[in-house]
Image 1: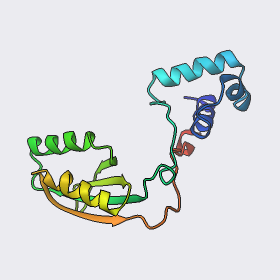
Image 2: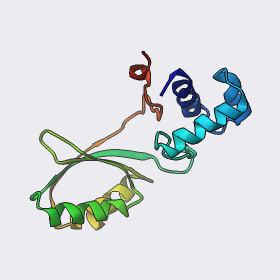
Image 3: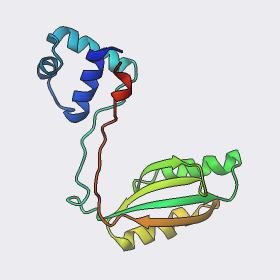
Image 4: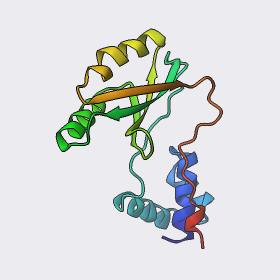
Length: 155
């Protein structure tokens, strides 16, 4: 990976729908080499996918919660049942296995508090693997970004 690849990654993180011609201009390459580099970055797994980011409030999702989850045990069967369940729930946007006092951190988005309550009691707490859940609610989103820092790649 060289400076051109890094520049390409920086630009497409901000402008995912940019044309190859415009991208080539922004990274100081001609279109053909720029396209080849983009293709190589995709094939190499550096670019996982392309997506549209929706405004959660405009589509009626007003609650963002962060749930710290502890499991009863860490047996393979327990973890697998937890993983399978959360993979199928659209309310769970992110799941992180964490260090510290809890096993997982879930980012959960719902329409309202009743919807969150329904999710907790009808889905999450019905899992036999759950020992405890401790939830914090986002009062105001101060920053959101999907852009990863690439500063460490530049020499």
